[in-house]
Amino acid sequence: MQHGTAALLRQGVMVFVGLAILTALEFWVAASHSATALWFLALIALAKVVVIGTYFMHAGQVFRGEEGERE
Amino acid sequence: MTVAATTLKYQIVNRRLGLWLFMVSESMIFLALLASRFYMQGTNRPAEVNQTLGLIITSILLLSSFTANRAEVAIAHGDRSSFLRLLLTTIGLGLVFLAGVVTIEWPEALHFAPPSTGYGTAFFALTGMHAFHVLTGVFILALAFLKGRRGGYTVDDHWGAEASIVYWHFVDVIWVFVYPTLYLVGS
Image (cartoon, rainbow over all chains, first blue to last red; front, side):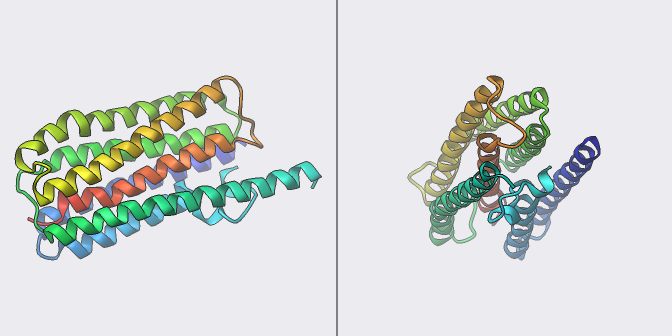
């Protein structure tokens, strides 16, 4: 169980760092590429939603009863 | 698998599906508000929008999603004290986010984008509706905290905690779209 908790902690940290990088990236895109920023920002937002939905909201488990990777 | 375990499994499937349907229906409200921002203003944005503050409160909400995830992992492994500590941290970060929007962002925005203007309408409608969802999220997390403190969740059945945390992530997902729409798009 300790091993599983450590793996989930590592995954959580990786997801958090990834989201932080994407947030910094969208801030930089908006500051430096204002003409084409809209589409870049939309893509970055979609990437963030996919990451949060997959790893934090467990979207893949909606139709499954078991706890899956959460355990 | 026992009858009780099978029943619990199907209950969890139904509950998760119900929660996701609820979140999808809530998303429609925000979809309409996001669309109205572009319909009324195109990609125009007042130069006075405080992008730094937007980045700070976004980071706070992002951090709260991480602590919420840790709280869920903790209760799923029977670590009640960590669950309570992390849930309390999430609630605190949610309140800091709310304070940032209501006490700093709104008074600033009233000067350069009053609600009588197109951008002001979009800004206050979007941030106001989102702030209301943050408030309800904090309330639901507080209920989960109180139930957890009374020993209400087990490793096998902690649906209340799971649902409140998934809802909190949903609030974060909404902000993922609101933040660039109001603070970053346009010049």
